[in-house]
Amino acid sequence: MLPDPKVIKALQNGKTILYPSDTIWGIGCDATNGEACKRILEIKQRPANKSFILLADSFQMIEKYIPEFPSVCYDLIDLAEKPLTIIYPGAKGLAPGVLAEDGSVGIRLTKDPICLALIRSIRKPLVSTSANLSGQPSPTNFQSIAFQIKDQVDAIVEARLTEELATPSQIIKIGLDSSVKVIRS
Image (cartoon, rainbow, N blue to C red; front, top):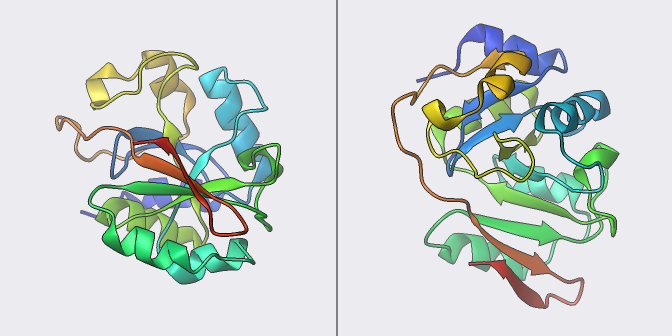
């Protein structure tokens, strides 16, 4: 099922969306649009010093934003048994609000058809932050998302509204020396 054209238009126009991801319900926007990323912080009531996870549709997209792409990541992603977010060092070309203080960024290669359609509609990575107020539990179904969140996003993907989604992704951090550190398993 492809997202409604109004959701695609919202993304293309620098707006925020609420959508089911390959893990949990998320709030998203074009990861290169600084104003849209700031709006997500406002909606979530989240401090500006916290970075976002991004979704990409291909290794080529990740490599565009991670100039020193560690080759070990090809194997890590290919061998992952569940969704895997990798924190890469030295990101470029993304909105400042998506980066951690050290310039790193977490990116997950998604296979989810809805997420892929969203990403391909803007041809850029998609912000994928949990659809909750800062400090609250991550929503695994549409009904558990606060009305405050639903009312403040610009568009909602009307798919999987009754499904229970999986849990958050695994997170690992890669160093420039290809060292691997598990952040969340």
